[in-house]
Length: 115
Length: 118
Image (cartoon, rainbow over all chains, first blue to last red; front, side):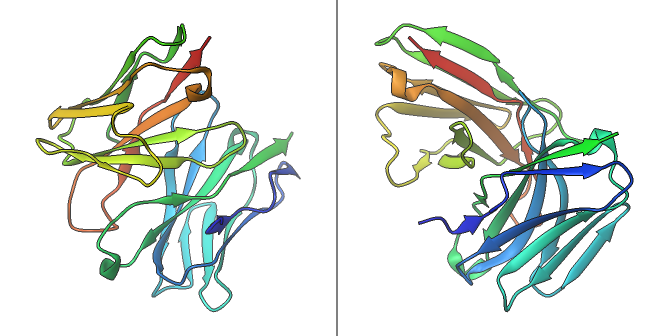
């Protein structure tokens, strides 16, 4: 059973508009949430993260929102640029009580930003 | 940022042979290295966690005798797929973590190794 779901396998957005990528999870043990960006034939690179004590974290064009009660997080990219075209994974970490710091990944959403 | 390399980037082998994949942290010492596998259109699945000088911890369903992990130093971990079969064909990615204090310790990912078993 998938604990982390990215229900949109792909998303196309016009350059300059907002891209919104969504991630839902089922287990309340997750305490720290990360977004990774991945280009073809490359490993994921860390983009932005948020801890469960916050509901928003912003870094330049990237903002991550967390709704703990809904077990939902989202990544907003604005304005979107063609170089943002990649696969975006959300990855979740359990809290300290779980005894491990192992990432659980979603399946990814392929973002295409159209010039 | 920190760099993690993997070698080879792509390997094709015959069924029944063994393949070794190297993961190196180039400019930092990694206390922990992770090995992931990604099938097409699937998420990255953690296979095992290894700490330098100790035995790897394998995730449920991952055969430790088939996927041998050696973490001989703070900058090198190897994954050996023994007696590879076509169903082992996948994209294998390693990551390295610097600290041990918790979730804020960033994992740096290697570029991945695509294994094709004929």
